[in-house]
Length: 139
Image (cartoon, rainbow, N blue to C red; front, side):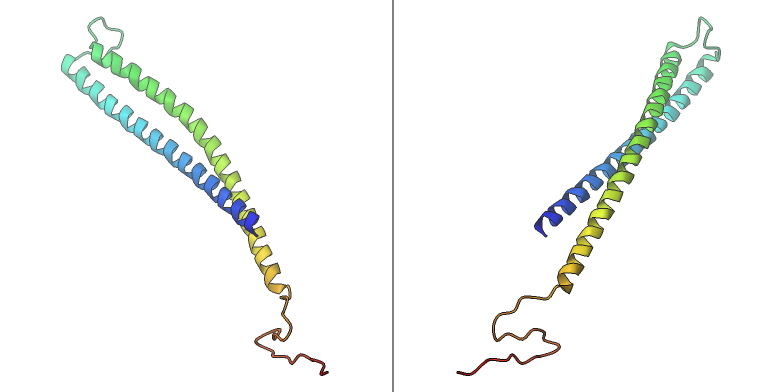
């Protein structure tokens, strides 16, 4: 029983860790998308101020050019994180399935223990629901 409890706690811990990893990756992706949107807004402002929208023009603002490169890097990072997110979700599904199996084993073990007859001491009643009298020989 003790090893089942330990195993169950370990699998709950692992499932929680995997779930936290999925949340962290999702937050990173959301943050990167927000940064990319913010950079696009800054690029648009810079292009409006300079009145040059052609990236290849010699007078294109250097800040806008650098922001475009940074934005592209963010999109590449988002793509890589989405791959890691899929892996993390698969690991989470596997850990959740293992946890479910361990919980079923634990529950089955508890049910079996409840069904087994309890060892009694001499003179003790077997069941409080059905009191039985023990035959005690007289000397």
